[in-house]
Image 1 (cartoon, chains in turn orange, brown):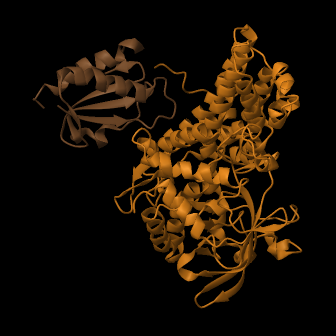
Image 2: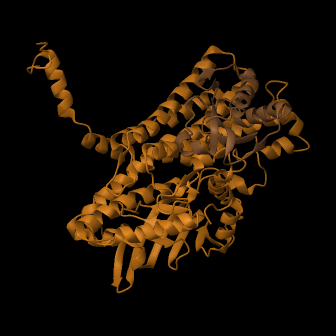
Image 3: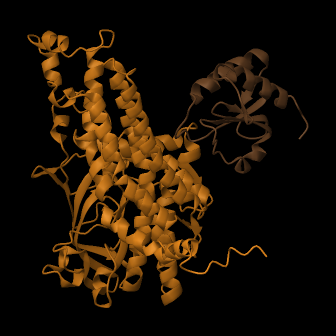
Length: 490
Length: 102
């Protein structure tokens, strides 16, 4: 099986035995749960579009491992063109779903683990890379969704993993056996975790020599015994339980974040890709974060496209689209959005080959990309709210619009342009609410801030990657503080 | 005539690619009998949604003897009014598809 159909993907989920809790209760049939299903639909779209001739050029690639046509989400990037197409694919999916579609984090983990394991083996004579190649072939041949799993619970942020009062604050090895290890800990914010077949777990940060137990990278099926999942709440999530389809804003799709608890989980040796090599923990984290910071130059742009579209639509519906300040604000939204896209494309075009053979984005430009992502979606959202007017936070519920006694009055006083059905206005305002302060704001705003690392993490990387002394010397040469031998025409 | 159609991925199209291809098929069908093929086409049509047209031609070049490339409003790098695209593309396909030289 090279490409799985969306139905086959859904069938896979139904077969999984997931130990999931939400609202304090165990959830048995999560695939059809109204709060969860929109996130599954978003992931399913990554399968659907790969089957569509109008999108396959972005959605599929030729495997470097098997030569087969595969979903690009399972691909190891072989060129800057591959990196660029990844960004375009993510933009496309953002446009189609209007939310986080969850599958990029696994792709970013694949590429980081692939080139890091190669370098570990070169340095230490281990065989992690071949194990990982075998795992990747399994993923590609079965078109699996894999959650890239990094962020630990982290306890007291002033203390390192080895200094924590509770050592489980960072996921660690608690038992070593002949055939594998047992791990304990918790990964937070896991995007699309229970919509995935497998998870690829990585250490959270750079580790010291005495922190080998935390330097563990491995892959396991999501329904491995000992795994406990607790579904993360989102703003306005229970609207999905109300039965309507207007007040949810996005009728079909949504994101997903899950608290992921490893309660003494066994990992077999053949699925371990790093085990104590603390000196490579920083490399793995930095590369995974770099790939993921590139991703945001695609996915957030695609979601931004839908918000810009919603802002344009609501100004049309409300009869203000010809006002010059309205046009100007829409242009500003496009400017900000395309700037993010430019950063995603730029760090891809400047990508380089790694020793393992797959391609890595330019880390500086990827961090610039992500730092802009921590800001611009907020400004785009502010402009969308400006253009929408205040009704999107004061509008009565869809049940009031349908009420036999007051419905006609609610509609009468909710009407703007007489030739635009009031329900169109209602739906569009709810979509803007969804994207800027509802369920989708988790992905579009807060995830833009903290996902793939909070802004300070990008600033630290920029400090490391920019040569300020070189720039100082440029200035000193121009103003005569230092000799400038370039200005010699002989 | 054997025709290969290859779409770009469609991440940021400035034209409606599906609508364009439907119009081209209608137009072409009035002029000649044609069938859609994946390989060994007389002529291939690349449908890019924007001028970048990021389809990598070198990866599919051998699937058709000649290629016509649409990238947004560009037809083989030349700007065409959007309402004339179906007709102009069809003319190009007939011209290149009828050419048996390589």
